[in-house]
Structure formats: structure tokens, C-alpha cells
Length: 232
Ligand SMILES: Nc1ncnc2c1ncn2[C@@H]1O[C@H](COP(=O)(O)OP(=O)(O)OP(=O)(O)O)[C@@H](O)[C@H]1O
Ligand SMILES: [Mg+2]
Image (cartoon, rainbow, N blue to C red; front, side, top):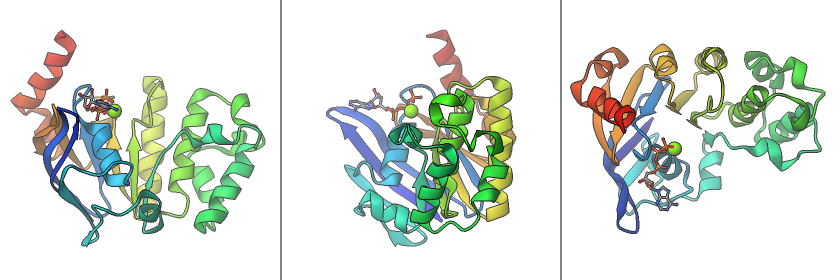
């Protein structure tokens, strides 16, 4: 479904992403993890088209999309979450979802609303709902139209442990039901191990481990990368 080959991106002399190769299988939830500054967000930007790589390629469904513009990528089925909810602060959640659904041809907004438990939020504007709910609206907007591939960069940022787990479970149920594929950047390792089918671990821009969560979890290099972070 998604294939990165030797993908490299440098901010000046800093190689934020350094020869990253990975494959994301159709229908999977693929976790992209690693310590702060590992290059996870830069990778997401290269896949969504916000950034163009210095070297390497991005293939999606066999198509080379390395140079394709971001908006066109959304059109062919690659969506990412944004903090879009703040773009129309005066609109209710229901109206925001309806406008977005219309744009991407989503017929079943109710299914997305139900999966993310957003029923109570519908009549309210973003300012009137909680932060956790705002995050869920943001994700709902990305999921409308059942894009083939959804890129989520720390969807649970700022949420409590319980909220993160609840969100991840909702998300997993919905993507499985709709046959979507997800690349999930997430700091809460408990959430990662709970919902991901496969993991790629980045450190300093490079892949240091890739495989089944249970196998990656025991990898000495991965443990060291995380211990290194908490010791710092
Ligand atoms: N706009 C920028 N200009 C210069 N350097 C940047 C910029 N954005 C990121 N970097 C650098 O690129 C590297 C990778 O950053 P990136 O944001 O991709 O990491 P990350 O894994 O998402 O980290 P975090 O867990 O903190 O979100 C870091 O060294 C960072 O300092
Ligand atoms: Mg990041």
C-alpha cells in the first residue's frame, strides 16, 4: 500500500530523515515511534506531501507519488489529521463535519460520529467542547470519505492515559470496519502495543527496528533509544 525507499530529508545540515525504507501493509495500523526529534513528523510530512524529500521515493498503491502535490494526494486517498477544527470556530461540530463530508463525498457521517463517540458534541462549537473531544473531531475530519491511508501524528497528544486508550480503541474499530490503513505516530507506548500490527522505530532520522510489536519491544537497540531519552 505504502512504500518508502531510502527516503531522506535534510533541514540544512540536519538529516531529519535519513535513508528511511519501510512498507506499510494494506489494512494494517502501522506505528511509527521513536524518541523526540527522531524524524517521525518529518516522515509524515513527506508521505502527505507537505515536504518533498531530498532523496528517495514514496510509492502509494504502486504509484510513484514522490513529487505529487499534497492536495492531490488527499484526492487519491491519503489523509492526515490537522487541527482543522479551529479554522471555523463559529461553526458547530455538526456543521464542520457536514461541510467536510460534502467535500470528500462521505455518505455516512453518522458512522464516523458514532465510532468516535461525538454525538454529544454535535450542537456545540469547538470552544464549547473539551480538548479530548476536539482531538476526536480532528480525527473524524481526517477519516471522512474513508481515505485508503490515514496519517495520524500524535492524535492522543495532551490526553490522559484513559482518554488515549479509549481514542485508540475507537480508531482501531473504525479503521478495521472501513478497511482503512493507518500510519500512527504515538508517544504512549501502551497505546502503540495495544493497537498496532507492525512498528517501525526511528532514532536520529534512521530506522533502528521494524517488525511485530512484541518483537520490537524486546529489541535492545529500541530499549536503549528509549532509556537514552528518559535519562536525558
Ligand atoms: N522546521 C525545522 N527546521 C529545522 N530543523 C527541524 C525543523 N523541524 C524539525 N527539525 C529537526 O528535524 C529533526 C526531526 O524532527 P521531527 O519533528 O521530524 O521529529 P519527531 O520524531 O516528530 O519528534 P517529536 O517526537 O518531538 O515530535 C529534529 O532534529 C528537529 O530538530
Ligand atoms: Mg513529531
